[in-house]
Amino acid sequence: MINKQILIIELNEQNFEVLDTILSKVGYACKAILDTESFKSLELQVDEFDLILVNSYINYVAVEDVLQLSEVDMVLKIPVVYMDSSKEHSRKMLEECFSAGVSDYIKKPFDSKEIIARVDYHCEQLSKLREYKLRVDKLANLATVDQLSKLTSKMHMQAILRHQINYFNRYKTDTTLIYLSLLNIDKLIGTFGLEKGEKVISQFAKALKSSIRESDVLARWAGSDFIILLTNTSVSASEFITKKLKAKLANVEVMKGIKPELAFGITSFTEDDDVKEVIERAKYALGEAKKQTYGKIHIV
Image (cartoon, rainbow, N blue to C red; front, side):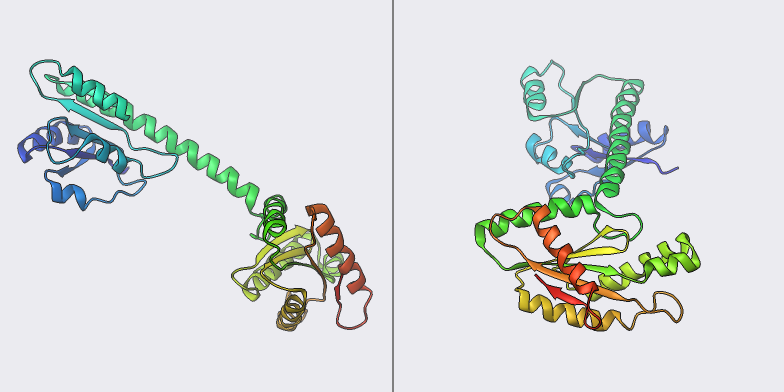
């Protein structure tokens, strides 16, 4: 088990050692910041620390700077706990800290049990948030990535297309769509089974992804059909790219001794298009390409 990491911003090493002694006994690993230079050179990573303890009387860093340091992620924030060592209750400091967004405020004198209890609580809260964010990220990944091909999912591609159509309608930049299909997949599935067919789709998707430009967006649309979105690309340029892509993929073996049979439909965005209209035109072009004996590339 990895010890939870505590960052302690203190006035001097003696103060740090007292806290370090208390917290290390219950499994925490502590790091000291004792001066301006050490603070300025510190760049936190999302999972590097679980809590920041700050002596409220340090004179080399402001509350706002500590809080800015703690915001290492748009969702997650490292808890910040201030400790007041003054003999009398510092109401002004208390109000300043909480209004700025500090998580907790401990008034001295305190004992080791109080420190441990408060540190435990805030570390546990952060741990729960991290677990929640991990689950959310996994769900987001399932929504945006097609699990068979590891390409952009259909649902996410629809959102990308909506955005790109709005961009096209505003700026009128050349945008095209290639709808391609792996034609011999049904024959392969009929001969070798569904599991083998899915493996072929997965392997073909890798080859396809490695063959397109970095600026292009590739998605598995349905079954063995794929869509490529080409921004800032005219129809004539898309046709040239498609011919190169077809020639390159023709040399790929989807199974030992078996190469892909492909057809391509190409269409360009037009004014006031919506996603359904663009897809239908590209799909129609694909259907016309499938009828061809040679080439199997059609533009509409």
